[in-house]
Image (cartoon, rainbow, N blue to C red; front, side):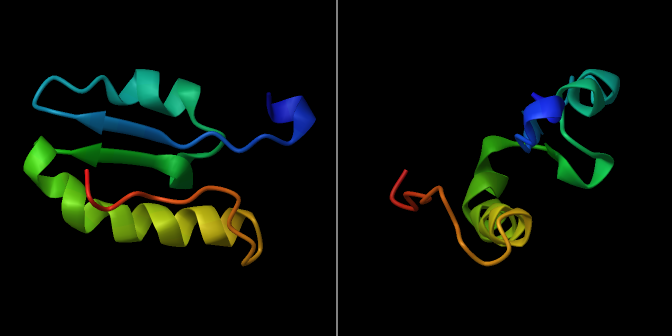
Length: 68
């Protein structure tokens, strides 16, 4: 996917995150996020939105449903 310029963002949740695996999945180290629990997802959605917009130079291709 990296050759096709697809930016992959890896998100791990919980106490047993394999950071090495997330790094292997993500496009870049700055696209790896680790959350301690699912309760952190609400605040994290803003960080994720900002990362998506930065990758797409202000043209977000993905919307985030914050009602989840």
